[in-house]
Image (tube, rainbow, N blue to C red; front, side, top):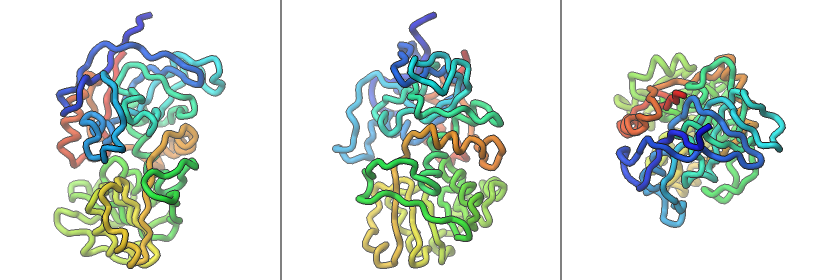
Length: 339
Protein backbone atom coordinates (compact mmCIF):
# COMPACT_ATOMS: atom_id res chain seq x y z
CA UNK A 1 0.00 0.00 0.00
CA UNK A 2 1.34 3.44 -0.95
CA UNK A 3 2.55 5.88 1.71
CA UNK A 4 1.23 8.72 -0.42
CA UNK A 5 -2.27 10.11 -0.90
CA UNK A 6 -3.84 12.97 -2.80
CA UNK A 7 -4.47 16.12 -0.79
CA UNK A 8 -5.11 19.81 -1.33
CA UNK A 9 -2.12 21.71 0.03
CA UNK A 10 -0.89 25.28 0.02
CA UNK A 11 2.70 26.49 0.14
CA UNK A 12 1.95 30.16 0.89
CA UNK A 13 -0.92 32.32 2.12
CA UNK A 14 -3.22 33.83 -0.48
CA UNK A 15 -6.45 33.50 -2.43
CA UNK A 16 -8.06 30.31 -3.77
CA UNK A 17 -5.28 30.03 -6.36
CA UNK A 18 -2.78 28.87 -3.67
CA UNK A 19 -4.71 25.59 -3.23
CA UNK A 20 -2.85 22.80 -5.04
CA UNK A 21 -4.08 19.21 -5.55
CA UNK A 22 -0.97 17.05 -5.17
CA UNK A 23 0.66 14.06 -3.52
CA UNK A 24 1.18 14.22 0.24
CA UNK A 25 2.32 11.74 2.89
CA UNK A 26 -0.46 9.54 4.25
CA UNK A 27 -0.95 10.32 7.98
CA UNK A 28 0.34 7.95 10.65
CA UNK A 29 -1.97 6.58 13.32
CA UNK A 30 -0.76 7.70 16.74
CA UNK A 31 -2.05 6.33 20.08
CA UNK A 32 -5.65 7.32 20.66
CA UNK A 33 -6.29 7.87 16.95
CA UNK A 34 -7.90 6.22 13.96
CA UNK A 35 -7.21 6.81 10.26
CA UNK A 36 -10.23 7.56 8.16
CA UNK A 37 -10.55 7.02 4.43
CA UNK A 38 -12.32 10.27 3.63
CA UNK A 39 -15.46 10.26 1.46
CA UNK A 40 -16.45 13.92 1.87
CA UNK A 41 -15.09 17.11 3.42
CA UNK A 42 -17.20 19.98 4.74
CA UNK A 43 -15.98 23.54 4.08
CA UNK A 44 -16.14 26.22 6.81
CA UNK A 45 -15.06 29.86 7.24
CA UNK A 46 -11.91 28.95 9.27
CA UNK A 47 -10.69 27.18 6.11
CA UNK A 48 -10.45 30.41 4.13
CA UNK A 49 -9.33 32.40 7.19
CA UNK A 50 -6.33 30.06 7.47
CA UNK A 51 -5.76 30.01 3.70
CA UNK A 52 -5.36 33.81 3.85
CA UNK A 53 -3.27 33.74 7.04
CA UNK A 54 -5.93 34.70 9.65
CA UNK A 55 -5.58 38.34 8.60
CA UNK A 56 -8.65 39.37 10.60
CA UNK A 57 -7.12 38.25 13.92
CA UNK A 58 -4.92 40.48 16.06
CA UNK A 59 -1.24 39.53 15.49
CA UNK A 60 -0.91 37.93 18.93
CA UNK A 61 -3.81 35.57 18.08
CA UNK A 62 -2.47 34.50 14.69
CA UNK A 63 -1.22 30.90 15.05
CA UNK A 64 2.28 30.08 13.77
CA UNK A 65 2.01 28.09 10.55
CA UNK A 66 4.38 25.73 8.74
CA UNK A 67 4.04 25.04 5.03
CA UNK A 68 2.92 23.08 3.19
CA UNK A 69 -0.37 22.94 5.06
CA UNK A 70 -3.64 21.10 4.50
CA UNK A 71 -6.85 22.96 5.30
CA UNK A 72 -10.10 21.64 6.70
CA UNK A 73 -11.68 20.09 9.78
CA UNK A 74 -14.94 18.37 8.81
CA UNK A 75 -14.95 14.86 7.40
CA UNK A 76 -17.13 11.83 6.85
CA UNK A 77 -15.68 8.51 5.80
CA UNK A 78 -14.79 4.96 6.79
CA UNK A 79 -12.17 3.88 9.33
CA UNK A 80 -9.28 2.00 7.73
CA UNK A 81 -6.83 1.77 10.67
CA UNK A 82 -7.22 1.92 14.46
CA UNK A 83 -4.54 2.47 17.12
CA UNK A 84 -4.12 -0.43 19.57
CA UNK A 85 -5.46 1.60 22.51
CA UNK A 86 -8.72 2.67 20.79
CA UNK A 87 -11.62 0.53 22.02
CA UNK A 88 -14.90 1.87 20.67
CA UNK A 89 -14.23 1.97 16.93
CA UNK A 90 -13.25 -0.70 14.43
CA UNK A 91 -12.02 -0.85 10.85
CA UNK A 92 -14.98 -0.45 8.50
CA UNK A 93 -17.02 1.88 10.76
CA UNK A 94 -18.61 4.81 8.92
CA UNK A 95 -17.81 7.92 10.97
CA UNK A 96 -17.92 11.72 10.94
CA UNK A 97 -15.92 14.31 12.88
CA UNK A 98 -14.70 17.86 13.31
CA UNK A 99 -10.96 17.18 13.53
CA UNK A 100 -8.72 18.97 16.06
CA UNK A 101 -10.47 22.28 16.42
CA UNK A 102 -9.44 24.77 17.68
CA UNK A 103 -6.15 22.99 18.49
CA UNK A 104 -5.49 22.47 14.76
CA UNK A 105 -6.26 26.06 13.74
CA UNK A 106 -2.80 26.39 12.20
CA UNK A 107 -3.39 23.51 9.79
CA UNK A 108 -3.17 20.55 12.16
CA UNK A 109 -6.60 19.19 11.22
CA UNK A 110 -5.66 18.31 7.62
CA UNK A 111 -9.06 17.33 6.26
CA UNK A 112 -8.74 18.24 2.55
CA UNK A 113 -7.22 14.85 1.83
CA UNK A 114 -7.96 11.23 0.93
CA UNK A 115 -6.99 10.12 4.45
CA UNK A 116 -6.98 11.88 7.81
CA UNK A 117 -5.96 10.79 11.30
CA UNK A 118 -8.57 11.64 13.94
CA UNK A 119 -8.43 11.47 17.76
CA UNK A 120 -11.04 8.86 18.73
CA UNK A 121 -12.57 11.32 21.24
CA UNK A 122 -13.55 13.60 18.35
CA UNK A 123 -15.21 10.87 16.32
CA UNK A 124 -18.79 9.60 16.13
CA UNK A 125 -20.47 6.91 14.10
CA UNK A 126 -22.04 8.56 11.05
CA UNK A 127 -25.83 8.96 11.19
CA UNK A 128 -27.15 6.07 9.10
CA UNK A 129 -30.00 8.09 7.64
CA UNK A 130 -27.76 10.49 5.69
CA UNK A 131 -24.93 10.01 3.21
CA UNK A 132 -21.28 10.98 3.65
CA UNK A 133 -21.74 14.28 1.80
CA UNK A 134 -24.46 15.48 4.19
CA UNK A 135 -22.61 14.09 7.22
CA UNK A 136 -19.41 15.93 6.29
CA UNK A 137 -21.36 19.17 5.98
CA UNK A 138 -22.60 19.01 9.57
CA UNK A 139 -19.84 18.94 12.21
CA UNK A 140 -18.45 22.46 12.66
CA UNK A 141 -21.64 24.37 11.80
CA UNK A 142 -23.90 22.07 13.79
CA UNK A 143 -21.57 21.86 16.79
CA UNK A 144 -21.33 25.66 16.76
CA UNK A 145 -25.12 26.02 16.89
CA UNK A 146 -25.38 23.25 19.51
CA UNK A 147 -22.67 24.65 21.79
CA UNK A 148 -24.12 28.18 21.58
CA UNK A 149 -27.75 27.11 22.07
CA UNK A 150 -27.90 23.79 23.93
CA UNK A 151 -24.77 22.65 25.71
CA UNK A 152 -21.19 23.94 25.79
CA UNK A 153 -19.94 20.38 26.38
CA UNK A 154 -16.60 21.33 27.98
CA UNK A 155 -14.98 23.36 30.78
CA UNK A 156 -12.21 25.05 28.80
CA UNK A 157 -11.59 28.72 29.56
CA UNK A 158 -13.23 31.10 27.11
CA UNK A 159 -10.65 33.03 25.04
CA UNK A 160 -13.33 35.50 23.93
CA UNK A 161 -14.66 36.74 27.28
CA UNK A 162 -13.91 36.43 31.02
CA UNK A 163 -16.84 34.12 31.80
CA UNK A 164 -18.02 30.90 30.24
CA UNK A 165 -20.77 31.07 27.66
CA UNK A 166 -24.10 29.86 29.04
CA UNK A 167 -26.94 28.80 26.69
CA UNK A 168 -30.39 30.19 27.55
CA UNK A 169 -33.68 28.25 27.78
CA UNK A 170 -35.45 28.22 24.41
CA UNK A 171 -38.92 26.76 25.11
CA UNK A 172 -41.61 29.40 24.66
CA UNK A 173 -39.06 32.11 23.80
CA UNK A 174 -38.77 34.33 20.75
CA UNK A 175 -35.52 33.76 18.87
CA UNK A 176 -34.20 35.73 15.90
CA UNK A 177 -31.48 34.14 13.74
CA UNK A 178 -29.54 36.53 11.52
CA UNK A 179 -27.93 34.79 8.54
CA UNK A 180 -30.59 32.10 8.85
CA UNK A 181 -29.84 30.38 5.53
CA UNK A 182 -26.09 29.99 6.08
CA UNK A 183 -24.10 27.10 7.54
CA UNK A 184 -24.56 27.83 11.25
CA UNK A 185 -27.79 29.79 10.74
CA UNK A 186 -29.85 27.03 9.15
CA UNK A 187 -28.95 24.71 12.03
CA UNK A 188 -29.68 27.38 14.66
CA UNK A 189 -33.16 27.88 13.15
CA UNK A 190 -33.89 24.15 13.39
CA UNK A 191 -32.49 23.69 16.91
CA UNK A 192 -34.41 26.67 18.30
CA UNK A 193 -37.63 25.41 16.70
CA UNK A 194 -36.99 21.86 17.93
CA UNK A 195 -36.62 23.21 21.48
CA UNK A 196 -39.93 25.05 21.38
CA UNK A 197 -38.99 28.61 20.40
CA UNK A 198 -40.84 30.97 18.07
CA UNK A 199 -38.20 31.55 15.38
CA UNK A 200 -37.70 34.52 13.08
CA UNK A 201 -35.00 34.07 10.44
CA UNK A 202 -33.24 36.95 8.69
CA UNK A 203 -32.07 36.19 5.14
CA UNK A 204 -32.57 37.37 1.58
CA UNK A 205 -36.00 36.66 0.15
CA UNK A 206 -34.83 33.83 -2.11
CA UNK A 207 -34.23 31.70 1.01
CA UNK A 208 -37.71 32.20 2.48
CA UNK A 209 -39.28 28.93 1.25
CA UNK A 210 -36.34 26.90 2.57
CA UNK A 211 -36.35 28.63 5.96
CA UNK A 212 -40.08 28.12 6.44
CA UNK A 213 -39.57 24.49 5.47
CA UNK A 214 -36.89 24.23 8.19
CA UNK A 215 -39.32 25.59 10.78
CA UNK A 216 -38.97 29.38 10.76
CA UNK A 217 -42.22 31.01 11.90
CA UNK A 218 -41.32 34.30 10.22
CA UNK A 219 -38.71 35.46 7.73
CA UNK A 220 -37.37 39.01 7.42
CA UNK A 221 -35.92 39.77 3.98
CA UNK A 222 -33.01 42.05 4.86
CA UNK A 223 -32.78 43.24 1.25
CA UNK A 224 -36.19 44.88 1.75
CA UNK A 225 -36.27 45.70 5.48
CA UNK A 226 -33.60 46.28 8.12
CA UNK A 227 -34.39 43.64 10.77
CA UNK A 228 -33.50 45.97 13.65
CA UNK A 229 -36.31 48.30 12.51
CA UNK A 230 -39.09 45.70 12.66
CA UNK A 231 -38.09 43.10 15.28
CA UNK A 232 -38.71 43.94 18.94
CA UNK A 233 -39.10 42.28 22.36
CA UNK A 234 -36.93 39.34 21.23
CA UNK A 235 -35.58 37.00 23.93
CA UNK A 236 -32.50 35.83 22.01
CA UNK A 237 -30.73 37.00 18.88
CA UNK A 238 -28.31 34.52 17.31
CA UNK A 239 -26.23 36.59 14.91
CA UNK A 240 -24.69 33.98 12.64
CA UNK A 241 -23.10 36.78 10.59
CA UNK A 242 -21.55 38.57 13.57
CA UNK A 243 -18.70 41.04 13.42
CA UNK A 244 -18.84 44.79 14.10
CA UNK A 245 -22.50 45.14 13.00
CA UNK A 246 -23.89 42.82 15.71
CA UNK A 247 -24.61 45.79 17.96
CA UNK A 248 -27.55 46.85 15.80
CA UNK A 249 -29.55 43.92 17.21
CA UNK A 250 -29.36 45.20 20.80
CA UNK A 251 -32.42 47.41 20.20
CA UNK A 252 -34.50 44.38 19.12
CA UNK A 253 -34.05 42.63 22.49
CA UNK A 254 -36.14 42.94 25.62
CA UNK A 255 -34.39 43.76 28.91
CA UNK A 256 -33.00 40.46 30.19
CA UNK A 257 -32.58 39.15 26.64
CA UNK A 258 -29.37 37.84 25.08
CA UNK A 259 -27.30 38.42 21.94
CA UNK A 260 -25.06 35.58 20.79
CA UNK A 261 -22.69 36.77 18.00
CA UNK A 262 -21.24 33.65 16.35
CA UNK A 263 -18.30 35.74 15.10
CA UNK A 264 -17.78 38.16 18.00
CA UNK A 265 -14.61 39.92 16.86
CA UNK A 266 -15.22 43.63 16.38
CA UNK A 267 -18.25 43.86 18.69
CA UNK A 268 -17.91 47.30 20.31
CA UNK A 269 -21.24 47.91 22.05
CA UNK A 270 -20.64 46.36 25.49
CA UNK A 271 -21.62 49.56 27.34
CA UNK A 272 -24.82 49.88 25.33
CA UNK A 273 -25.67 46.23 26.06
CA UNK A 274 -25.18 46.81 29.78
CA UNK A 275 -27.37 49.93 29.71
CA UNK A 276 -30.13 47.96 27.94
CA UNK A 277 -29.85 44.99 30.33
CA UNK A 278 -28.84 42.59 27.54
CA UNK A 279 -26.33 39.73 27.92
CA UNK A 280 -23.81 39.43 25.07
CA UNK A 281 -22.03 36.10 25.00
CA UNK A 282 -19.99 33.97 22.58
CA UNK A 283 -17.89 30.84 22.59
CA UNK A 284 -15.29 29.07 20.45
CA UNK A 285 -16.60 25.83 18.96
CA UNK A 286 -14.64 22.74 20.08
CA UNK A 287 -14.36 19.22 18.69
CA UNK A 288 -16.59 16.71 20.49
CA UNK A 289 -17.27 13.15 19.41
CA UNK A 290 -19.70 12.84 22.33
CA UNK A 291 -21.85 15.71 21.08
CA UNK A 292 -21.78 14.45 17.48
CA UNK A 293 -23.02 11.10 18.84
CA UNK A 294 -25.78 12.89 20.78
CA UNK A 295 -26.84 14.82 17.66
CA UNK A 296 -26.63 11.84 15.26
CA UNK A 297 -30.14 10.48 16.02
CA UNK A 298 -31.63 13.91 15.18
CA UNK A 299 -29.89 13.79 11.79
CA UNK A 300 -30.91 10.15 11.37
CA UNK A 301 -34.59 10.95 11.89
CA UNK A 302 -34.54 14.12 9.81
CA UNK A 303 -35.39 16.28 12.84
CA UNK A 304 -32.31 18.30 11.89
CA UNK A 305 -31.62 18.53 8.16
CA UNK A 306 -28.40 19.43 6.39
CA UNK A 307 -28.82 21.81 3.47
CA UNK A 308 -26.23 21.68 0.68
CA UNK A 309 -25.41 24.69 -1.47
CA UNK A 310 -23.08 22.82 -3.83
CA UNK A 311 -20.46 20.07 -3.99
CA UNK A 312 -17.08 19.91 -5.74
CA UNK A 313 -14.51 17.14 -6.27
CA UNK A 314 -11.55 17.42 -3.88
CA UNK A 315 -9.33 18.36 -6.83
CA UNK A 316 -11.54 21.44 -7.35
CA UNK A 317 -11.17 22.86 -3.83
CA UNK A 318 -10.06 26.12 -5.44
CA UNK A 319 -13.46 26.44 -7.18
CA UNK A 320 -15.26 25.72 -3.91
CA UNK A 321 -13.33 28.55 -2.22
CA UNK A 322 -14.18 30.84 -5.13
CA UNK A 323 -17.84 29.97 -4.57
CA UNK A 324 -17.47 30.72 -0.84
CA UNK A 325 -15.99 34.13 -1.63
CA UNK A 326 -19.14 35.04 -3.58
CA UNK A 327 -21.17 34.74 -0.36
CA UNK A 328 -24.94 34.19 -0.07
CA UNK A 329 -24.41 30.46 0.45
CA UNK A 330 -27.54 28.42 1.16
CA UNK A 331 -26.42 25.84 3.69
CA UNK A 332 -23.03 24.25 3.11
CA UNK A 333 -20.29 23.59 0.56
CA UNK A 334 -18.77 20.10 0.43
CA UNK A 335 -15.80 18.44 -1.30
CA UNK A 336 -16.29 14.86 -2.49
CA UNK A 337 -13.44 12.35 -2.48
CA UNK A 338 -13.24 9.52 -5.01
CA UNK A 339 -10.99 6.51 -4.22
